[in-house]
View 1 (cartoon, rainbow, N blue to C red):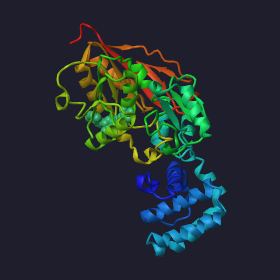
View 2: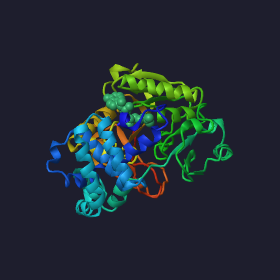
View 3: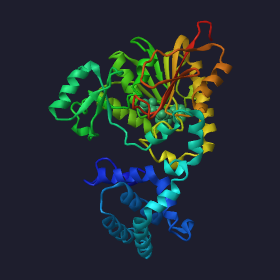
View 4: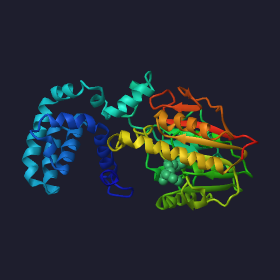
Length: 414
Ligand SMILES: C[S@@+](CC[C@H](N)C(=O)[O-])C[C@H]1O[C@@H](n2cnc3c(N)ncnc32)[C@H](O)[C@@H]1O
C-alpha cells in the first residue's frame, strides 16, 4: 500500500495519490463487485487492470471530478502502465460504469458486507461480538480518521499548545476526557505543526494515549514496553516518567527498533532499546524483575481499519487463532518478568474478543499469581468487558478501537 500511497517526502502529488489509494482500498469491496458485473470473465483480469478500474471507479463514485475526465485519465494510465491492449476494455467498462452505476451499486448494496465494503467474515465477527454497535463500527471504519496530537506537558501546557496552533491559524479542539489530546480540525503535514520537530507534540490517537496513564508507572520503577515499535507509547511513558526513567523497549523486528530510536530522538528522550522476542525473555532480559510492563500486542488491527483500510483486504479469519496464541505467549512471558505487586497492562487495537478478554481469561487460568485490576477510566462510549475495557470506532469518544486490561501480580506470586 505504501508504494501506492506515496512515501513521505515524495512528489507534490503525494497527498492526492495517498488519498486516492486509501479511498480505493476503503471502498474496494463495494467497487470490485460492481465492476465485475461489467466483465465477462472478471477472474481473468490482470492485476494492474483490475487495480486501475477500481481506482477510476472510486474517483467516479466518491470524488467531484467529472466522470469523463476520470475515464480519459484511466485510458491514458493503461498505456502508462504498459497494458495498452487493455485500454479499450478500460474505456468501455468505465463508460458503462458511469452510465449504469446506480443499478450496479444497488445490486451490490443488497449485501450488507458489500454495502459497507468489508469482508463477510469480518462483518459476522463484528456483528456477533458487538450486536448493538456493529452498524456504527462498520460505518466508522470507512470514515476519514481525525488527526490527534499528544502534547508533552513537561514542555508547555495544552493551553499553550492550543495558542501556538492558533498563531499558525491551525484549528483544533482539546479532547475534554483526555489530559493530553488535541484533535486538529483538518489533518496537517507534521512539518507544519508548531513544536513537532522538537518533540512538544506527537501524532497519536486519543484512545492510544490512555495506555501510559493506565500503566501507572512512576520514576524509580523498572518499566518494560514489550512490543514497543514504532514507539508511540514508549515516548508517552518517557514523557510521564521524566529524565530518570528506567525503561526497556523491546521489539522482535530489528528494522522497527530504528523507528523507536528515530521517534525518541525527536522527543529528546532515552530508553534501552532491545531487539528480542517477548515470548522468550532469554532473548533480552537480564533477570531483574520489572515493576510495570506494557504489552501492546501484535493483533488483527481490526480497531484501526479507518486508518489502515487495507486490513479489510489482507486479514483472513485463519489469522486470528495464531494472533491469540502469540498474545497469550507474550503475556505469560511478561508475567514471569513482573515483580510481586507489579502491574501489567495488556492492550490491543482489536475488536475481536478472542484477542482481548479471551487472552486474559487464558492467562488467569494458567497463572494463579495474577489477578485483574479494575481500570479507573472514563471515556464517552467506553464499554466495560470481562477483565477490561473496550473503546469502539463510531462511539462518542471518536477514537480508534482498543482493548485494555490490567493484571497485578499478588505478593505471594513467584
Ligand atoms: C501494536 S504494535 C506496537 C505499537 C507500539 N506499542 C506503539 O505504541 O507505537 C505491536 C508490535 O509488536 C511487535 N511484535 C510482534 N511480535 C513480537 C514478539 N514476539 N516480541 C516482541 N515484539 C513483537 C511488532 O513488531 C510490532 O512492532
